[in-house]
Amino acid sequence: MKDILEISKYILPSLVVFATAYLLIKQFLKHEQRKIKHQLLLKNQKQTTPIRLQACERLIIFLERIHPESLIVRENTSGLTNLQLQQKLILAIRTEYEHNLAQQLYVTDESWMLLKNAKDSTIRLINTEAAQTATEDSSIVLCKAIIETHMQLQKPAIATAISALKNEIQQIWS
Image 1 (tube, rainbow, N blue to C red):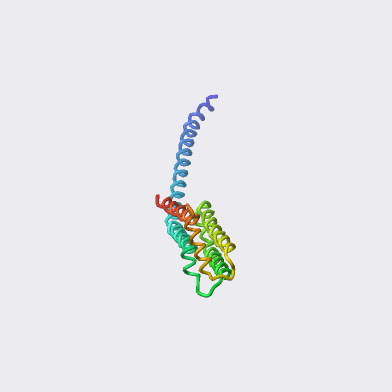
Image 2 (cartoon, rainbow, N blue to C red):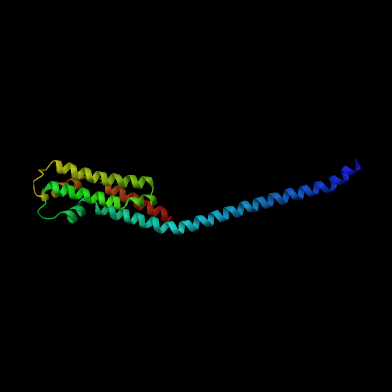
């Protein structure tokens, strides 16, 4: 019995020292791991922030390019019929959209859905106005109808999408 007490005099303090050292080392390693993770996050943020800003910039340019007024100015040429202009406008929108598809990686799902909605509503506007005009008429008739209808909209989908992208850019900086 005396031997057990003698051994426990040495073992118990050793176990206390071991447990204390173990907990301190564990806490230190956990802190270091959090520190490294934070540094990696900051490094990634430094690399992704310019890419995200560039993506937002490109998507705003896309939205401005599919705005009915700028689209018509860019795509309408003399001698086109309403049908030809309609096809040309829709092709231009779809081409622009396909060119910017990869940008969805860098924006929120909400912003991307608003962008898609803006694209779809612009195509719908063109198709609706084209259906109300004679296909053989001069393209000027369709241009006028599209612009007039778009101007009557209270909050066009393009403006909503641009506003969402601007908010996203503000969140990147804050």
